[in-house]
Length: 174
Image (tube, one colour):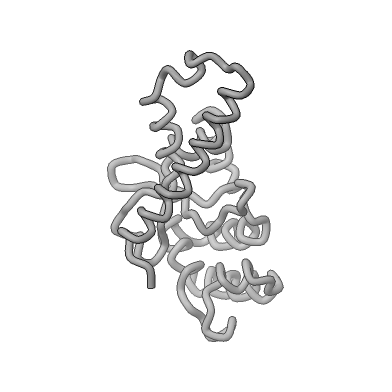
């Protein structure tokens, strides 16, 4: 397994190469240095995409926070809130009131996996967000010992996951 230090080194090397290419292209195109004047804002935007750390990271996380998601999606906080309210994004609220969004729900293009949203909505009919997120990340015999997230993101059919989710929601209600 790769350590955090090794991951940080790999990330910094990749970022360094990409930043270098961007600056080289800007120089070749005659872009003014003013385009890169606010170095702190650029660094803030880049680091906002990094998953944040929380106590639930071991099971449910890592997470993005709202600031990171708004930057990644290039939308307002209100647009993210609307997705939370409609169940179009998997979101859990921390005790301090901050919302976090598990990284595993997102495709590489930033969309939310539609099968996960289906299951999320079914689970939310009977439980709080943290219970639902934990359910999605718990290994289950019905999925060959995989989590619902792994099952779905590896191409498994959504029907057995929805059936298991609905059965558990019924048990929770009893």
